Amino acid sequence: MTTPKIAVVGAGYWGRNLVRNFAALGGLGAIVDPRPDIAGPLSQQFGAPVLDLDAALMAPEIAGLAVAAPAETHADIALAAFAAGKHVYVEKPMALTVADAERMLAASDKAGRALMVGHLLQYHPAFVTLLARVRAGDLGELRTAYSHRLSLGKTRLEENVLWSFAPHDVSMLLALFDAEPVRVSGAGGAFLTPGVEDEYRLDMRFANGARAHVFSSWMHPFKEHRLVVAGDKAMAVFEDSAKEGEKLRLYRHSFDKTRRPPEPAKAELEPIPFPKDEPLQQECAHFLECIATGKRPRTDGAEGLRVLRVLTQV
View 1 (tube, rainbow, N blue to C red):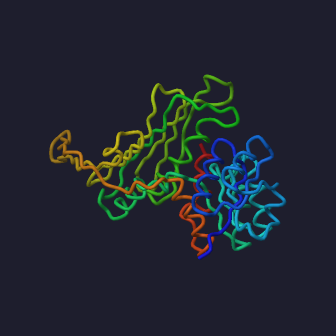
View 2: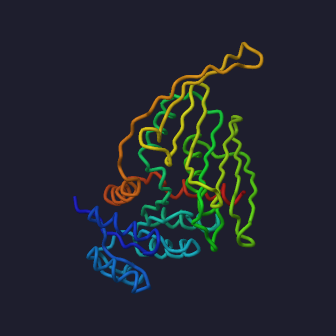
View 3: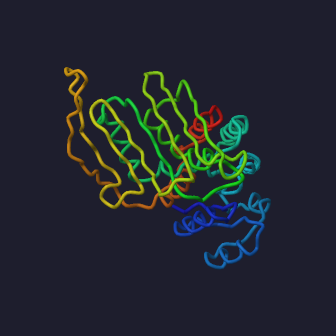
């Protein structure tokens, strides 16, 4: 089966990682970036031509676009791509408004082309393993979960920490609970740049009474990427910043509800093995597979829209 060719639109801080991975998979068809000092060296390194956006949209050998341009351009680029018959992978956030995301989704459906959103951690093998365990009922009914995405920098001016960090966490939590929240609330604080929140706390409530929250900050003294999920049978932790062997672990803690107050019964940590595949390469490979086979992306436009609704509500 011939590998579809992708034009990567935007070759900056994150786009160059897409260039590298699509090249490794044999799917890099072109680089679209108006900055010759950035696009030129990547073109030479990976052997892909530099095209402007119109040329990439007109090129018959280009099957899809991977968009890592500024978020405010996502909707316009995607709509142009669908009009040209191309598939679209767009980095998070999918768009800046629900209306734009809905237009993207409608255009994708009308064109019969894939729309995939770059919620990277949905392709992390540890999270894929955790989600499978949750859906198999290993943790029982989920009661609560929280996700912390904390570090010292990299700060932004064009978006706050909620829009920069939290899409990944919201995406994971919605997948774990397999539902949209019935209530969303939150607040943040801008300490470095007026109007740009440096830390943000988001809370979600679900129809069955379960709750989840996200805490994001780039003003934290150390890196912490931790997702904790508690069910009525067991608890699990996905901590990408932990050392090898402890990134994904299970705790079969329980509570004796006959005691007042309920008394915890602690269990030993159980490491959960998972494949060591690179998440971004898995994500890029999934997009190529969806183009080649017509498979619907795991993080499709509808999933991206659900995440965007939460972000805009808060």
